[in-house]
Amino acid sequence: MSWFDWLLSPDLLNQIFMGLSRTVILFIVTSGLSLILGVLRIPNVFHGSLYMIGAFIAFTISKLSGGSDLGFLLALIGAPLGVGLISLLVERCLFQFLYEREHLMLILFTFAFSLVFADMVKFVWGTDFKSVPVPSVFSGFIPLFGGSPVPKYNVFLLAIGPIVAIGLWLLTKTKIGKIAQAAAVDREMVGAVGINVSWVFASVFIIGCLLAAFGGVLVAPTVGVSLGMDFSLVMEGFLIVIIGGLGNIWGALVGSLIFGLSQSLGILIWPQFGVLFPYLAVIAVLLVRPKGLLRSTW
Image (cartoon, rainbow, N blue to C red; front, side, top):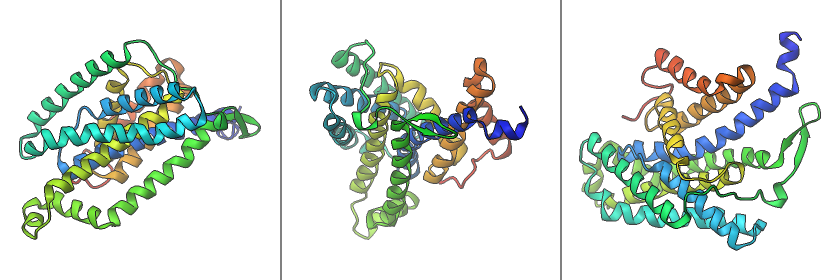
């Protein structure tokens, strides 16, 4: 097979498609992480825990609804709201007093919270793997790329990604978005004009956490929901934020694209070591652009 034929082969196109589906999940979660980094300057290590809790809440709602399509819709709404309430309590009770502390302390503090959340998940849901059924409307396959079937649910994910990206872009154009950007640069000046910066920061933190939970719900039908799924995600998330540019939401999109596609194509090219390809891509990017591909807000 020539290189041209290989580039047009259904196997390659399917892997690219699956990589783009993975990119959507990574972008949704890491955009929230990047938002918190960019505005609050908090390296939130327990961001992955919120992603995991979102997936477990989706499991509970799906189970209570008998695995119906309505249950999945309720999970898409209920899980982010539940995680949003948790994040509101954490931010109001603790985080608002720590914004001025050094980053090392914040890393240790948020890491401690990830351990607390892990124990909470173990207490509530146990240690067994859980499964969330794919909604019936998205079950099955669609023939694409020369008749090769691709899952309908992954097509749904590809539709969700641009909606979230456009929503975040529109958020930056709103009043609260502009205030948040100004507060990230000079908190004291924003406060001096009578704006309650504390609640602006709380709003940004909650939005970032909502995105983590939303990503957890979306990924739940595609993986086994389990204790520990947060650690691999948060490691990937920070790498994506670093190569994209610290605090840059569009950098999170570019980084997610690099990470998702390199992982998918790596599995096709060299299955035994496919997991290494995203990390090799990260190393290559940092060698060329140590501060990330797009402008860092730090």
